[in-house]
Length: 202
Image (cartoon, rainbow, N blue to C red; front, side, top):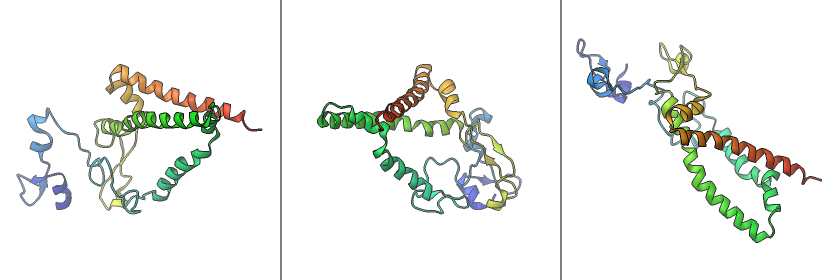
């Protein structure tokens, strides 16, 4: 590899040819291969948790496209579009008084804060166990060579059921079961709210 990539993964000079850079076995795979750290060299800098400029820089993921417009569109639609959603408004309409509705919204917001943020991290945890730098990662060979200008490059193929595998294999049984139950409960809550909301439309 070139010097930049070698420095990125802390490569060392090769034993047989000091002019070339080789895999740092002592760092990434010590103890004779019994405690190796998986690193599939996911582009561009391994499996970074956050690309800090991907919400402001359209070239943050270059040479791959950054869906900057769709990222902001999704946030605005979910943030402001849901203000007029009938399945949400019907809960306020069912309150006895405006004060009760306000208190209920505040309590619901606090519960969303304390419950939603931990669950939001489940995506990151799933990526650690089933992301491009995990032992379970799968790749499609020779799919991104032209974009990166490399002789060979394999595109990571995300596992569509990675979260279910995480909940049933890595997570403690009780926590995994509650996560799966929470998904079903959220779907049922949204569905019954939408059904009830249709009854308010004259």
